[in-house]
Image (cartoon, rainbow, N blue to C red):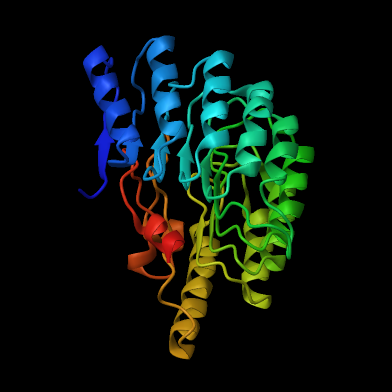
Length: 316
């Protein structure tokens, strides 16, 4: 039997449901497990962690919205990840991890052989967490690292932390999608990120929605897109104090770059993914604000964690 998915959202889990989940994991019959916002006791959470430790078919794990709610649960998840070898995408959006919690989880994340996508949005992180996360973005020529990273809505991170992340992104040979929406970045941090994008050979999607940017940032980003060849295909600038004219210019330049790549035969097989990310409080902007290179590459919110495009690509 082919592995299937288990998706439960915002419900209390009964003992019978927990037993079924554990059985499916032990039988390697589950490829995607999404328990976003579910309520369960610590004992049942531990049972699920022990089952997913040995699961070899599980590729995507969604524990968004407070499922990992205490230091003891963080430790149980970390222990499971030390043994598991199959999880490629891990979503912990809306978990009260804090820097201390990520420190408990980080050794397992750093040593996991398959992990390529990580969502730590709204996890109450600060600069100490950024230092750990940078270790998951190894420099060129080092071991493989994350391809997709979400750090939305972590206002405790200071400009010093963001500058450190920008340096790591600039030197990473892996990261393709970076979601920083709804953080108070401001123009100074945006300038550092523009340098990182110009230096990166892999970054395709950058989400800066609602990050306190102005026309000053937009002009810097426009100069970067106009004068430096990059891999960037989508730049999200909605909910910022940026004129529609500047946003449209950036959008047009990104579209032109994509068209040139398609003519050269160098593009067409890469797609942006946003699997398992939680929707923000604000509505996404129109395509002229999102600046996608083509309609097929627009990011789609998948709140249930559905979709296997990244998983299929990783297995190729």
